[in-house]
Length: 86
Image 1 (tube, one colour):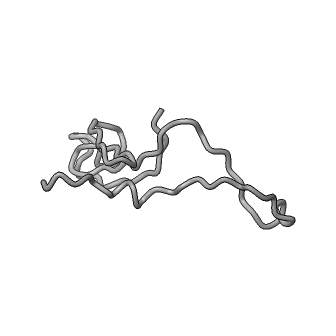
Image 2 (spheres, helix red, strand yellow):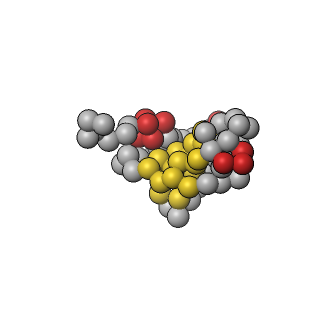
């Protein structure tokens, strides 16, 4: 590895934006969601392991019950989720 951080999560995650001005058609033409507290991460599974990639490139590996996320479910498939780690 060349020492560069993994930019997978930095480019794959949604980014919350502040609404500075309230548009006139807010009630009819916009979707507004609250932003949950925590750190955003990309969770992916493959080959029997689950990995949570943070925006700064840090990766956490752990087993899970997601498809492809544990030794028992490694041949089931893959999964990718945009999540909040708290």
